[in-house]
Image 1 (cartoon, chains in turn blue, cyan):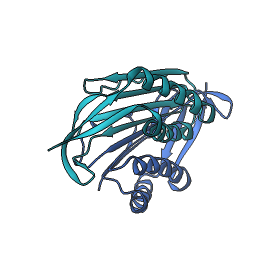
Image 2 (cartoon, each protein chain N blue to C red):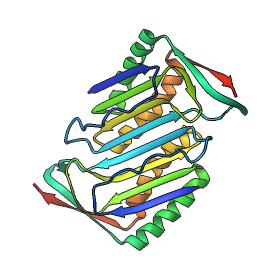
Image 3 (cartoon, chains in turn purple, cyan):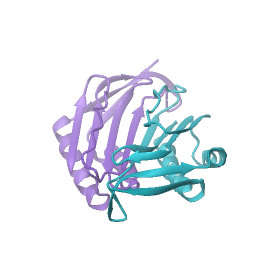
Length: 127
Length: 127
């Protein structure tokens, strides 16, 4: 199980997707993008801040927990911090697994857990 | 709703992911990759064949049907035909939508429907 977790203040650039094994049959990717409306109000972007060491530790725990239900071969999670303008990516996730259900389910579960349990906060910048 | 459906006998090259609107908050992508084991047997790759006009028509119907439950802004589906070696992509799907649930759910549903209802067949080439 290969795991890459990264926080960055630069635009998110997904790493090249090398296949970790010949048994990988599915790769799923998700990008969360800042929308121009936040709660019905026009914004120019979102600010994200995190407690990085705690967030990383929590994410590792979440990945390990999920992997028992949805076994995966490799996963990447990149979260941008600081100001993220409308139309740019704040969160990138990639999962490689043998079967498609694991990859897709894992992404959905990861985002739910990330929003609920990981110390990352956002605030809006009015446009 | 922008829809791109393509069958190709060349390696799958995902088109550049331009955002169709500033209301897109989620992009999900899925790649189905040929594994080296098919039903426990080593293979060198899979052959895919399709009745292209029927497959395209059926896919358009499926996209339209799904969009009422999971509204999306834009979607791409590329299916490779002919011989696809182990480790290469046979199916690529990308969905852009306002919210993540629509994009992720749509990909899962699409693949299920594709396997059940679309005239695309595969056969294994022993290694």
